[in-house]
Length: 142
Image (cartoon, one colour):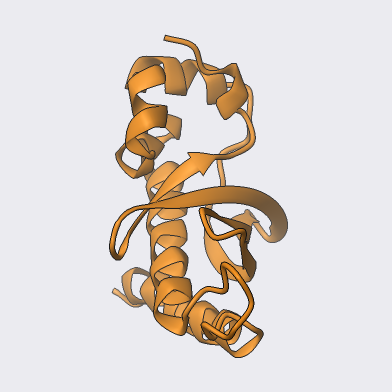
């Protein structure tokens, strides 16, 4: 039970750290609001933990619609087959936005170690962020 509660708590804490570090919706073009940073942290946590528990094909539910259209679930699993699967989500280290896409540094657990990966998110509808790019997706072909 504790493990099930740890990931959402970590995502919320990460979002608060990210929002305190500049994602406050200030005057900079493309600046993210604290709420957007929290949404991205939540999706990153859910996607990472899905990948950890069910394999790379579990990321499919978190892909942006245009990426999913080009990369069916079977192709996604094949594209990511050679990569180590994370064992869980740790935190979001940073999120930057260009006004269209948000690039996040996601810290994932790999056993007792941690690794940083760069994931790119797009907001498909207000408050609904999806994964647009991640290491290995470039190998995905339908």
